[in-house]
Amino acid sequence: MTRTTMLRAFCFAACTAALGALAACGDGTQTKGTASSTRGTPGLVVLNNGNAAEPGTLDPHLANGNWENNIIGDLLMGLTTENAKGEPVPGAAERWETSPDGLTWTFHLRDHQWSDGQPVTAGDFVFAWRRILDPKTAGDYAYYLYLIKNGEAVNTGKIPGTELGVSAPDDKTLVVTLQNPAPYLLEYLTHYTTFPVPRHVIEAKGEAWTRPGNYVGNGAYVLSEWVPNDHVTLDKNSKFYDAANVKVDRVVYYPTIDYGAALRRLRAGELDIQDRLPQLEIDWLKANMPEVLRIAPILVTEYLVANEGRKPFDDVRVREALNLALDRETLTSRVSRVGHIPGYGLVPPGTANYPGGVALSFKSMPQADRIKRAQQLMQQAGFGPNKRLKTTLAIRSTAPDALRVPAAIQAMWREIYVDVELVQSDAAVFYAKLRQKDFDIAVAGWQGDFNDATTFLDLLRKGNANNHGNYDNPKFDALLNSANTESDLKKRGEMLAQAEQTALNDYAVIPSFFWASGELVRPYVKGWETNASDVHRTRWMSIDEEARAATLRQ
Image 1 (cartoon, rainbow, N blue to C red):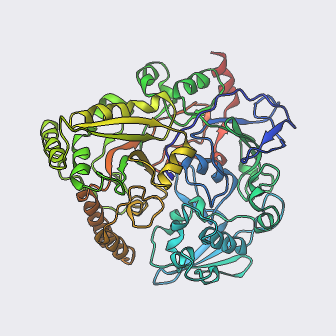
Image 2 (tube, rainbow, N blue to C red):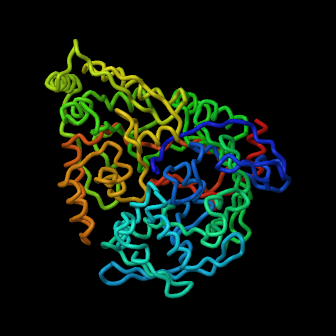
Image 3 (spheres, rainbow, N blue to C red):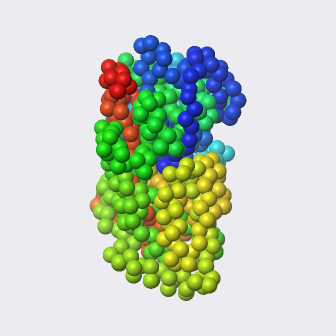
């Protein structure tokens, strides 16, 4: 998601460009736009979507955030895709079969085209998967395809991409050999890192293939405009195999981070959907606009990560003290107040094929006793009232609302001799710092790529690009590896639970809470359904225009 999926960025400029207006590309260069971002064209059904951060890229092999996934998932479609309920259904593949040992899957592609009319072939998938695993691509999410036989060896440059366990016997048949059985594969393949990309365009355009006018996809929409920090406009793809059932003609994605301003825009009719609500307005919303609230548990974990590559965070006593002092009940009941669940682990409750019940050892300890214990640990580590730990907390947003939880944590840690400076930055800067390990402590978060515990636990694998805190425990990695070779789902879940407990005993992260969704959706938007994955493809939505007009007249 998130990866992480949970960053929300800002833009509320009114978009009034007419057809043919100039639109900017992802690299800042200008290209001719082909569509207006307003709903002023008679008979055109337009959905205005307040969407997370400004996308850093629309290349599925370089993306790493849920805000990018929302757009890419409208432009491209994998072998399987999500329905409105977030469940895997046939996508580019219309059917498939698997070998008795679960290691070989054969996918049969449906007869469909790229948006430029060229046929989508199994060779496009082979090209795409080799491309993301090519070390030269340097995709943060390349590890996601380690599930494919030889995926890791290809990505680390030990063997050529031609040795990857994927082949195309003909244009409509894709044979995939896995490193180990994966009963969750159909959901796994809905993730954007497994999407095909148009080889013929990439070889002709290079990195510029993601610009408006160049972007070619096999999804329900095509890229029409991209004005950085303003909006991304997608128009219905007439070549999409199911275009006759796509009801929204145009979707405009606005990067929104100031949730209060976004609410005002929604009330004014400028937005139909807003991906997160302003926490300070939750009571007002419940009293005045309850019909727009969409709050339900989703597979998202909010946590903090301490950089174990820097002192004193290599000291387990310091990491334990930071964990102890975090009052999760106060954060969820008095600070965020959206409905989040106090988090004492990394894997969210309700995760499929997972026993749960794993938690930090002090979960049942009263908060006063936790503080006392934390103070003792900090003193043992060399800190105290006269020698306080001065550090920084990196925050992945520049919005004022994003300071509420970190400011509360800042106050909680003062009690254990820790003085924290809050450092806000936008998405690009924040994630660059994390990749470079240039931080002390950071507010992190992860939205499950698929409904399985490994999507969360893999964050702590040695060598994973998203293992920002440099956690390294061979026992943890060995448990994950053993679980990956276990076909019995119950035994596999037990192994994964042991791995999570191992990491929690090491205080590898500082869990804070498990998310409840907090979207705002106008009732006239039909086909938007709450689901644990919190994925909502525009393809399934429609607009009741009479209801919208009536709403806007109020």
